[in-house]
Image (cartoon, rainbow, N blue to C red):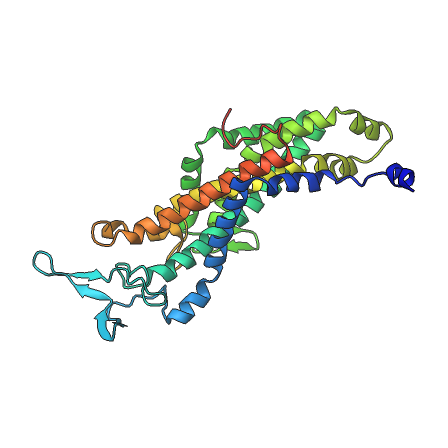
Length: 338
């Protein structure tokens, strides 16, 4: 009986199970993922928070009055400095649902705007990441597999995008489209639509994904199993989908958190410059801009969204490094110029 048990083959875990088991042991990566998920859940609770607080984060409330310890307190307080002209927004009350982080220069609840702004920043960064991965992967696959004139044309187009500094290209595209939107045939995108920053950010980062993917496809194109499939007359599209694409999946997965972090930074920069998310919508970048004039009196208006951006980007980068080490320790994927 014991010999039969010893002779039974052991069930081995697949490569994906091994990779995710290794990732689960990476405390820094798991802690970073937990922090980011908490931020995501908090942002998606923005409508619930605004309803519970009874506030409209997109409407000015200069004459609003709230109750603190049974006393009526105006949201916009009369200034006591100089000649006493103007108003100063109420500071943090540290009471959830009651201007927890205070108000901005228009009397809007900063906490509610922070959550809504984070929701928009996350949605734009996530959608732009998907956009970049789809078109970057498509360009890399086609250029790397078919080669020849196809590779030359696509590579030169990518080089044109690569030649521009990221932020300069994003700012230029935003300035051009922010006034009139985009109209291509039956497709029309209004100037205030969130699709504008999504498309712009997605376009500028395509070369950062397409070039590494193209390099991997070129190497796979000359591997034995792909050459064997070509000699057997297997159609090119089938080789791409069944032989090459599965072998670059780990690279694409690693790209997700890293691209998400870059896209969040780019979106915040564009919104801070008023060429990203447009009023009355909010993002972390627009809230920082709103808080510029309040840095000396109500610094939390600008500091809290800046801290949210920093923590989110740091969490995504740490998790991305752990994900890369778990899926492909030998990977040299990096998002930067050679």
